[in-house]
Length: 500
Image (cartoon, rainbow, N blue to C red; front, side, top):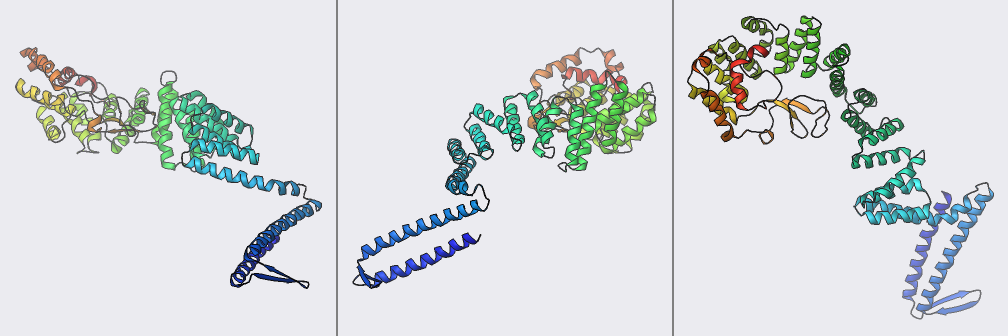
């Protein structure tokens, strides 16, 4: 520190002397006269400039000698590397300059320049822990994956850079589509640095995609522990993973599946599939009161046709009027909700109370028409004895109508007939919501191809079938109505007693 201060003061003094000398030289008309020990020298301006340059070189050499002498003095005082550092200082300066230029080239997208600078920095510095990462990333930028992988493997050999090397190879395997190897590398990287958020996310996504639900729950707990995931989001995603465990075990271990479903429902009571599976488990165990409580809680959060279907399974052999009375426990929670009105209309159609069904449906078929509401309206018209022309009109409108709420991925907007923890289209985790999909994403059946089918189905019916057929609403299910409208017409006659 003291030596640096001395050099700074000397440099400032030298600049001042040179400035004064230059000013004096400019003012001297006959040149520069120097008197030394009784001798007088007269120098022309050019000679004075040359002498000044010589003096500067001598000063530079003097400083170098003094710096070397200081290094020797430190060596004699016990610093074994003082002399070697003196000779390597210039190489280090050049090496760090090359490293800095390489980083800037990498940031600006100049991969080949970054690769050259990394090679130069390694030649001067001889410190691969500093230059290998730059080399690997520059090699990836220019498309030399083999060189990048070789450098990452070198990083793995060093304990201080092992995590960087493992993570680099993991990313390469992901880019190549080798998810099995990538997951093993992600697990290794997670063991090396469990608090690294990006590694946690990659490992969780890979575990969910490979249906390693137990491992995914451990990774999710680590995210909560290290503060990279809010507690409410952790509970929701843990519920999704527990539900996935329940689905996986449902064929081999029904008790274990029920336990996992109950855990999922406890963590997220508004998760519809968890509530349905939990209620079905209680129904199988002859515990209808528990099933009712679970379904009512979920319906309070979000009315859903799957919840109504599960509620119907609690007492499968009741009469239509008994079912209407029992369903009031759900109806009164959200009496004006769209799903409640559709449910009531279906129940009244089953009981053959078509005016009540029309009142329950209200103006949904006009204000928010979809396949389900329009088909229910067709069933009501048939039950009230309307002409085939009227019924055909409602069914014809259903051809191009919206299919209503469906399971839609919030990431890619793909439609799924059933809920799943991982979107099969984009592999997003916990991204499916029950909602009306964007118009551009919803498949619409061509009306010109479907209308003859509808008309043909209606004309083939005998008068006896028309007057005695029992009207039936659309199936209360979360599955998108992927059938043609021939099935929609049959739905309006016969399937109510089987579902609700």
